[in-house]
Length: 409
Image (cartoon, rainbow, N blue to C red):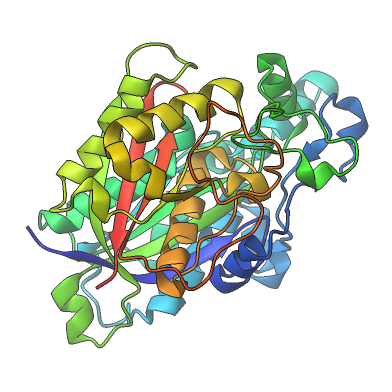
């Protein structure tokens, strides 16, 4: 099987629109969670979210931006950033060997909601001609392929919170088994719409706003955690076959060495220790690594009562005595839960940790839960650590988990 490396990274996230800015803000303990500043915010019970600072007209022409939902706009910009970072010469490449795999949970949520508003509130007789093309889940991946003429495999994965981890993992397999040479892989989510937030409110999993600081509302592994905070954003990586990358003199950030995917088949919203254990073990089994080789885990860490305790127990089951020596953090504490894009954003955080030999913190962890008693790097990041292999966990509603492992090369 062929070796797969990461040669490019792109991100549009609540804490920054480049990998370097994003990670610097993570390490500084900053929060991208704040009160929503939208015309519908006063109609919400939960008024906090993690939005991106993104003006499409700074990156796209007015004509192109007008035909894309926000989920496709940010995905395309993140993909363009990753391609530029990898210095891919697409003009000379065999584009039939380059594909796009992208994860999203809600797809074009804003386009769908706008259509319903026009129909049911405004009693319009017609919708915008491109409503279907903007709203469909596959729109973002399709736009990336069209933009660059990439005629390799182009697939969209929608497995809720693990969508983009699964997309990256399956893209890894495409190269590993010889079906492609280069893959653009990641995820995008833009679900901060009135109806979507109200639907999440009804599910009763959203965090209560912290009374003293909205930015401190997401508290993974804390005894006083109250739930997740919704976020938006996109992240993409360029995956490339090792010898191809070396032949063109590409900068190699890391090797993607492992991927595990499984479903716990127990309950659509409640994770199990056995299910999360199965996915992490599957990722390790796809490598030549032992559990004690992993130095850092970017945890799923949603700040929901059930997940954080289950994930703690699952890590203990997989890593045994080494679990106590692992540095683990939930960067969702700072950038919120980006749903279909969460895995890709958090994988970039793990890649940056590997590159900079630094571990970002779990912020807002002032009151640790005794049931979550591992080293969750509370409140302050750590520099000058020694990392060779890192893991990124994603566990989803519906039960599908995706775990990625990256290694220094």
